[in-house]
Amino acid sequence: MRPLSFPVFLAVCILMAGCGNGHDQYSLERGFFAVQKKAQAIINNPEATPPAELKNVVDALTGFTKTDPGKKVAVDARFMIARLYLAKKEYTKVRETLAGVRSAYAKVGPVCAEAMFMDGLAWEDQGEWDRALTKYQEIMNRYPTTPRAIELPIYIAMHYKEKLKPDKMIEAFHAAEVYYAVLAEKYPRSQMGYKCRVMTAQVQAELKEWPDVIKTLETTIAEFKGNVPVVSIRLDIANIYGTKMNDKATARTLLQKIIDEDPKAPSANVARAMLDNLSKEKP
Amino acid sequence: MKGLDIMVEKRSGFDTFRRSYAYAARALKGDPAVFLPFLIFAGIEFISLIGLYLAPQAPFRSVLGPIITTFWGKQYLHYPGNFFLLPKLANLARMVLSVVVGSLLTGIAVALLYKKPVLTALRKYAHFLVVIFLLLFIFYMTNRQIHIFLVKYFSAGHKNLLMVGANMWLGPVSIAISQLLALIMQSLLAYAIPVLILTDAKFPGAIGRSVVCFFRNPLITLCLVGFPMLIALPLIFINYNSVFLMDTFMPEIVLWVGVLGVVINSLVIDPLVTLSTAAFYVEKESNT
Figure (cartoon, rainbow over the protein chains, first blue to last red):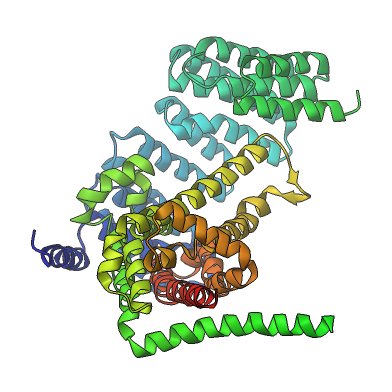
């Protein structure tokens, strides 16, 4: 290569990159980011937004929905439009947009689950919790393995907690426990199964059923040893013994075992710090 | 009498400091070509920065895309994620360029300052390369070890270290330590390249003599290296708040900060440190 060839090649590359036709992925993302920022400003302050501004942003977002439907910006643009209408409390338009999402992405479970969830949020915004709940239960039945469906049982229970309805909350947490247990049995030794076990423990912790939490965590260790870093689960068990069940002796034994197994591991440092904290606390 | 001695000593220290800059300024005025190596380095660094900025776009994506995906993740090939990685990549590029090209260009600048033939610098390229590599390697590894220690310490459940919390240690304090480390490392090896140009010493001897020269004149060396570094403080502050700036203005602001960094580091700080320490060294040598 002659000495001038490389700088010339580089300059051509820079020019080529700078003079893109605006339809490549990166330019699309950059354009979408700018519109998204405008949309976020409307969502943050919907009352002060003039109707013309909303129309401009919706039109711009609609342009992105017409790109390749497989592209992330196309899906995100549709949800952003629905979010804008939701902020402006235009519920009919929200549902029209979400129906469009569900028909365009009928075969993509997570996208449909998200669309149905936003539909539920719209019902919640309208003060119709029962209709929202029906939507959420539909998501859990139709798309049980989607990230949204996994979060929903706890979301429902937390709604009752927020609304100060303890009976309904406990009932929802128990329902969640059953839901996760069924899924964990259905997908054993899988990522899904692991997530369900963790969520079960989380639900039991919300209910303060500490012996059950320990039992679930021990089952998780037995099922997933070698596939996931179980030492963090063992630290959680020790923490529950020490801080929740007031069984400091068992907590110390478990932590000491973690340290003895691999004294130089980061988990051993955590165990040492936990042991220190246990010693500082009054017996 | 003792007070007068101290005053004379202080004045002489300040005079040496002033004379070093005056010598470098005279040399620059007399032969502007002394500045050319710094200009070339800034140009190369600027091109590398633009190349990294364009990494997520064709045709650069085909070359840099797989590297970025492997080491940092696919999210940094998308807008605006690429701007979160850009300062880190620019820093790494500067390090590599400093070793491979910067070492030689610094040597040429010092040779031009001493009115020695450029060939002297070219012949000693391997030695410059080792000196700059060692400087950056020790700095990078020490910095990394400190960071790893802090992360391990706080992830082990400790809330404070020397009564300071994790947020401070992993934020502003880490930056301050890094700057202090850079100051010490640069001061220790500040005279290695002038020694290589002026004498027949090889890199171990040059490093040894540079360290000795530093310990004989610690304060003046720290000042010659440290004062120009203060110019970069606002830039460090801006970089620390880059996420806020990206959010408030636009992600491209990171690129402009990077360009400003090239100008300040390569066209202001590097010439000031290199030429003033070289001038100070030659004055010290002529006195002994």
